[in-house]
Image 1 (tube, rainbow, N blue to C red):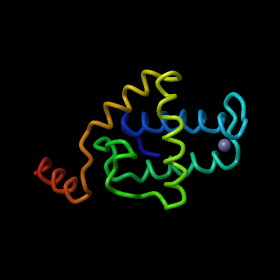
Image 2: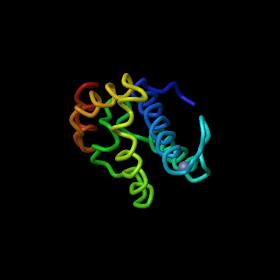
Image 3: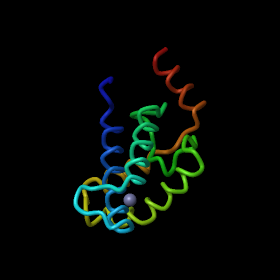
Image 4: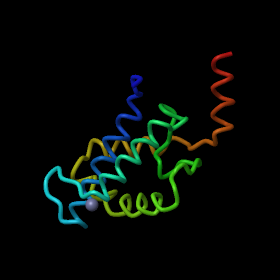
Length: 122
Ligand SMILES: [Zn+2]
């Protein structure tokens, strides 16, 4: 696999944490365990990130204008973010802070993004 941008690596770490917090709170898993359902979700979220066209330019998935998640997975993502988002501050203040800062990056449409890329490489 290609070397990934820090941005994506960090987003993966954040999602990984959030899924664990959610799973522990809802499915009575312990420590680093994840139930099959959450394992599946996490693998799906990682795959979406690997394929994210914005990479280092991305805002957080919650703000993204490109809806790359399947509706059913998006519902689950929303539930997880709503539950784990506030709890992240306690569990991983550093990651939570980064996530907040990343979220301030203005989300852009794929067209805007491509235009910008084309300009900067010209
Ligand atoms: Zn679970």
